[in-house]
Length: 629
Ligand code: PEP
Ligand code: MG
Image 1 (cartoon, helix red, strand yellow):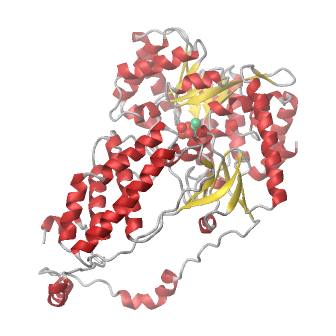
Image 2 (image 1 turned 30 degrees about the horizontal axis):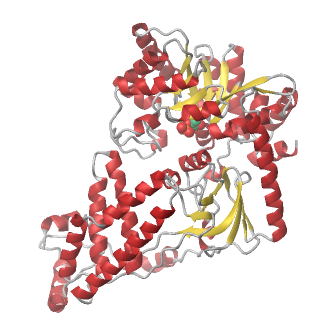
Image 3 (image 1 turned 90 degrees about the vertical axis):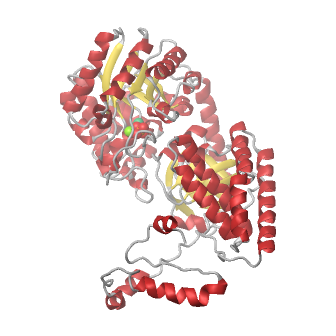
């Protein structure tokens, strides 16, 4: 009955519409409406192409049912992608989103109201249980907000009105929650917009009650969370005390969610295939986040071996942790610096405490993302100052704002692109917004106070980009003089690696971002649900580019770091050291282990290994080579 509602359907030519009418008028209204629509609603319309003619040939292909993936059998081993190290075991807790089925019209107003109350009561009680159990304040706060949403009169009044009009409890509830979520999403403020996910979360919980789909109880003991794909914020909300490990059907090792899992220290295997979603809830699972291996209902001896492995690894880590403050020097006296990757000033204390000799990558976009508007220069300066203060004289390598691609800034809309990873991102974007970039550079130089500051530019692919960024920095430097400043670029684009012999004359250093360098070299989206498993930074093609970069830098007396996830991979450490990388920058919790890895090597053996690896054809061969060395 409402034109605006009809328009907001967004119905397009050729789509199928479903019509629903109240029982008293349905017999007359539905055929009349149907006829009117088919006749074009008063407009001249061209008939749709005759679908039925083509259908007989196409139908079998189009309708061929997708084979339902099979759950791996008892004792089976499934190879996934190693996303966060560690061995974890526990019962499977499968989180799959269900489609709900329910009637649009209710049986009676009183009955539907009663159903809704019962469902709301049950969900309220469940959430109360979650609040009681939550260890972390942040998790408790999320669920308190959920309870407030359940009781929001703006929602419940609207639902009540719809029940009064004869809708079923499920239909009324879903419509109101979905409309509220859509409205919420449209808000400018990123933080408020994200609350749409919370609305949908409680929406699903209540719908599950109304439709009789049982919400799975969390197992009492620490469990392996099994999901299709997991977003970074899903992981950030997990309680590491309850989630022993993460197993996903899709995803790759350098997706940002995997990075968060590593930071929380939760072992994770991702991209293990859709079959894992068919595993029965409660099945015992064993995951090895180092090897990317899942074992379903492992036999006692397999479990025993895994436990022994875990103990050995824990002992190794314990020994490494005790020596975390010492520098990393190979058996034949070659020192490699081990720095930390952090995203905000709060991370610096932990990094230093874990043995970081400096910060090798400050991802400044996380500071921008933590604000609902672009932080001004004073806010940025204070944040950078906190990092330098916390480092107490150790060097800080800062990356200028790196957004676009998989990291959009909500308050800085970018034109939609067909291929955002190949679009306006990183330095390309900031060079188009010199006001933002100069503001950031000014904040950085002001915060420096003669402490060792290194600034690097992300996603540089050409000499011109580097020179423009450098010139801009030099201009700002004339305004705000600093003593100890180096300027460098991240090597993330193959063209930059290949141009390293030219760039090395002009830069002070290179820092290799292996996450993106692997993505662009192998032409595999780093977050691709099924392919990213193959995006292994130990691919010989990536190693060749690292080799070119290091040789070029050393020819001109410049240093090279690696700040991608590869730097923390125990199998990669010998090769990176052997290729001549001077600095490895990893998340705080990997520092001790990486240092220990360096101490087990001799430079000469690592160099031999690296030369051998450069002659191989696949990442699997490279991994096997290091494992048996
Ligand atoms: C990289 O690409 O390797 C890198 C360190 O940057 P990010 O993961 O933030 O893209
Ligand atoms: Mg990158």
